[in-house]
Figure 1 (cartoon, rainbow, N blue to C red):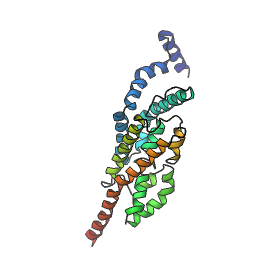
Figure 2 (figure 1 turned 30 degrees about the horizontal axis):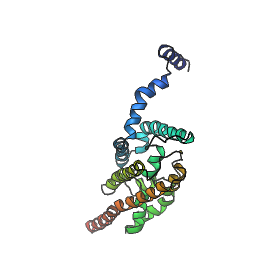
Figure 3 (figure 1 turned 135 degrees about the horizontal axis):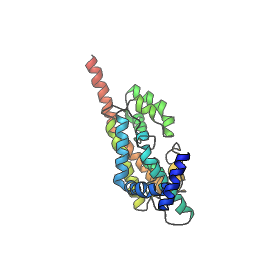
Figure 4 (figure 1 turned 45 degrees about the vertical axis):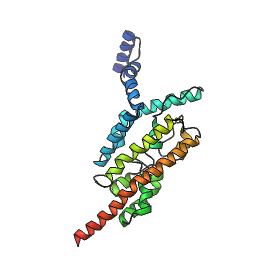
Length: 240
């Protein structure tokens, strides 16, 4: 503590700025500009999803990059909203939760519903039943490691691409003014639709957009769940 305080005092004495201000100006502010663009946030999500597929907790891997930037963005939005000013940021921590991780990483609420709709595999349906309540609260490790999704060439594809597509839908809905920008930091376990409503201080356009994203996620996952049905038949025939 003594060394850290001394170092901070010297920096402030020499530059007239605190170390945190220098770090923000040189590192965090440029990164905020990158993440606030659609390509940047999609790249970050893509990296997280690839980590998941190979068996590593993707959210924890990108957390050191994601959270300082997205939490700063929602803090700025909240301050602007309270001051009656224009809300500046599209991409925030709630944006990530509302449009890209409903049901958990990979937007797997769509996968759960797809399994209930078309899956003929008893193992998938049992795991989905056990995972449904946690999935409503955006906890999907039972699904990721139970089906499994990791190292699964069939389910890995929609698991990676779904949040990229739904995130894009959400981004353009906000850009066009149909959905509102987030102004309230809502905890990540808050269920889908409720989190969209609360984080935007009651914007119905956001709720509608999130419903559209859920439907899109179901449509993406459906053919891959059907393909998993066929793979089960092929495995059974191979054993016979």
